[in-house]
Image (cartoon, rainbow, N blue to C red; front, side):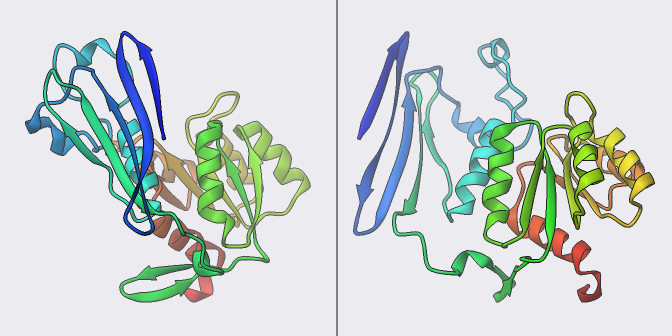
Length: 241
């Protein structure tokens, strides 16, 4: 299956069956291409190819890093074929029979199987980006936790006034009320409620700023499921730590 978008140049994306139970997804373009020497860094956070063409385009340098993180949830790795001036092809391959009953509730950690079952716990996710919110939901849905949603710090505080939760997972950059201000208020009103910061900022002082606001832990985007679940479990079941 292929879909072509013909504007100036060409973008093509689709999927093909590979072997018995694999699907390869791909997207190709006839754009400016990427130098071979730049390929090793394009999936790093906040990295963009530094040439005269790329400086003409916006973006924070997070798109490919987040995409690689999403692909890794399926055990895949995004591959790229490109050369300067000849466009690019990005692809990844995943099995098309994915679901095994209850398998999604287990993660392999250091060769051992660890179970995350939080049916009696409630987690408030505070995130203004609907795509990121859906991503977090996918990561946590299989744990059985009761998931609550807020799009900014003000909404989060309103929910906490009406509902008891066991942990808050909060983005730090949001409209209306950001995560820093919301966390300070949460910790003043509910000092024993654990708060984990999640932020696209990965600079040296960002973790320190989050902890100074009162957060109990910190995660940089793109979120890694293993790290996220381990940090949540450590905070909602401190006796196991």
